[in-house]
Length: 363
Image (cartoon, rainbow, N blue to C red; front, side):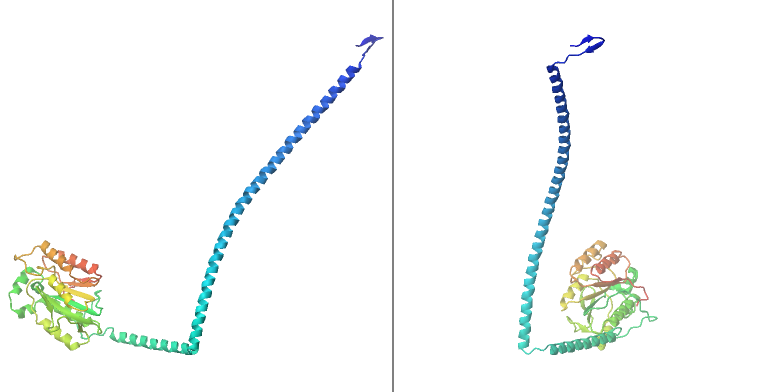
């Protein structure tokens, strides 16, 4: 312990006191060093963990790239197999062609002779084409007979007169005498010579003459008249197709038709059934009429036929028409038959034909 001596305080330190101080200093130094090592270790671990995470991401990217490479390799292998297959087929075809060429050469085949033969064939075909074009130009606009209406009218109708076998159906029933019922009844009881001069019937005759004058000269035709029954206009030509180029026969048919007098009822069923007697069947049908039928195969029991009954008779008759054959309709409307125009228009449209209701001065 310290004690005072002449104004000073003195301390007496024993050996143990000195050792205790030294041990404390050592412990303090150790604690300072341990803390420093712990801080350095944490920083080092953090850096190592960051590097490990980066390496793991690189590994994942590498694995994904490896999968893509394997898929690409599979596609390349597949394409190689397909290419090898095509190469094998091409090689086989080349061998076949070479064998054919060798066989042709063994038979005395000459490439030059073959080329010359092909040139000759082409020239022959070109000559035939020129001849056909020349024939077509000569036939176009050329008719077997001429027709001039009042004022030389040639209206654009949209009526297709083409085809190899053209059938014209002409309604010759009593209703073709006039447009009004009262005039039909009046003319029906007159002399046949007066009936033949009836205005409506005259327009019908002119229509037939115009049609026959427009037929292609290299085609065939037939004209059937129908009222309660159907028959050819030119006797002795039943079941036959007539040549348009036979002008004398065309003129004879026109004269025969002009001698007819409209009479009786109308049976479209018998008219369409008569088409089956023609062989081959027509490829173009032109129907000239003024309304729906008044009877079927036989006469009705009563003296009158209602509009609904006429419509029923018409729809039954249409089922007898040959399929896929255009039917063009030239309608001269009659009083008291309002359904005729719409029904006949539907027939023309459904068969890809034409429908016209001409003016009084046509053709």
